[in-house]
Length: 217
Image (cartoon, rainbow, N blue to C red; front, side):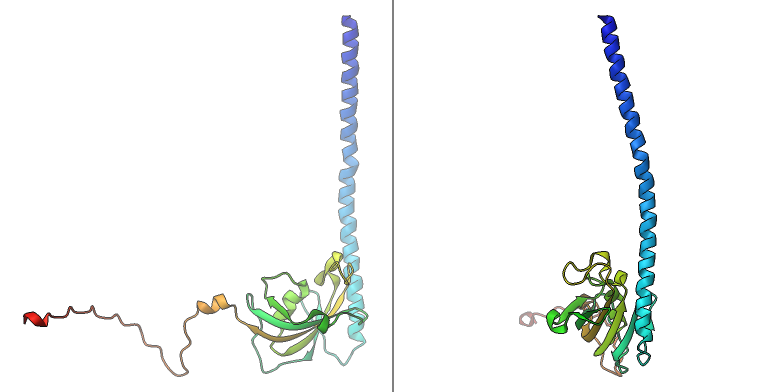
């Protein structure tokens, strides 16, 4: 009887040990595959960005009469209408009012101005296309600018889940109609003084004297 129990315990221990060893060995290829996947993914992204930049540079080269400006963020833009009389640009918290048209890289309209309608954007405080977050802050009132966005500055690998597909570079034309300062910031500012008028220093008022009782004089 004792021999039978010993045999059963030995068999169970062997099975358990074998199972644990098998489980540990199965983990290793997953770890190695994970590192390999990340490297391949990074390489694919580099190639994707390079290919899209080549396409955009060909578009720029094919329009020698149009002056395009490269940005540190990795997109390009040109002026359709430039307002040289304005110097102020939208800042964080300002409310920007604009119209927008979106095209694919072959110049086919995806969303027209009439499709989208007037747009309102709280600068740097709302989710918006990454390229536009930077691009709108480069604009002045009543300017129209065309942006050439690689997909990583547009809607990235997921698209907009509607008409814009994954990894799709875009041509976006923006007309900035107006922008106004952040109302909260405005309330913190002192009232503006008329031109040429020096604000007077605040003077402490003298304590009010008690009135005499004329009935007892």
